[in-house]
Image (spheres, chains in turn cyan, orange):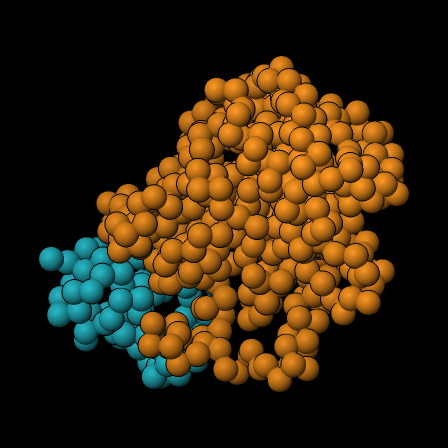
Length: 80
Length: 400
């Protein structure tokens, strides 16, 4: 079963995972996740370079503190 | 989005009032202007309701911890808010109970100029509690005659004001329900509706959004100043907000930054721009989005927006919250599948299909639109069915 991931605004470079099937690694839109990502957490939709903005709701919610690859979990370890 | 449209935009069947405003309900209201009269209005309402004619709605009680001896700014605010609730467009007729004759005289004079169907009584005019109840029930019966003569007619959506609220927030409300409400707000604003969003503390961390989504720098600065005042009051009280938010619990739930947390609530406003910064209960001047400076406790913030004339309240939730407003039908919107299955008797719009990926945000916005149309034309919300909701007026200073 593919994971449910929601992109709020077309400008977003992250999606939010909205189910509890953490062992699954592909979203319903075909994004391959690089790790288990819990409910409510985010995954990168594209490669994001260090210093680039993390966009959610169409606004910058933070900055990448290191480079992030497509499908990677985006959270406090790589975003501030 | 589909509805009846003519040259004035979409329409709904509402109650036109003498002052040109439009109601979505036609309540017979029984108001206590001071807490001393609360018990009598409760007793009178239940006695009236028990013998009311079939087909009539229950009396709508408007009462709160309304006090005497407040300092001037608080006394003025309480007075203004009670006045705006009595004269709210969802009220078809009202009976107002004051404690003493002097207060009744003042309220009678203030309310007479409006030409609305309002009767003012003084508790001290009666000789006995039982007589006061009987008198109140009798006047309610007279006022009900007037309520029954009023009919719905076609009114433009542009006569509506909506209050936006959220409570029991979680990831489902932040990324599903609130963005769907945002889509609805974009559409409503395009129809010429007034939309009010409040809870100043929830804007801490959302300053960039206020700057980007205000019609002018002046409006942005006035809103930012209110946020700053709230944050410094918290600091003076020893509460640090910025720096400790998101909390460890928020981080565990997936929230990475304060802006992300704040945006979960702020995305209710869609892409609309703030047209003004309002005081508690102050009516908005024109179509579009308006910010109101209020405390964050939802029964209190909703009271402010309803006093400002909001006829309908949209309330998004993650986990359940029973809050609503008796005067303004409160539409509960929820996408969390667990909450929706456990609280079937409390949720008006279920957006589980959105969270489970079966419908788009635009379709979810359309579902909200349809619910608002139906509720505005008389469909009862769950908070109305349960008779839930409170009137709470904030206070800045200790009473004398």
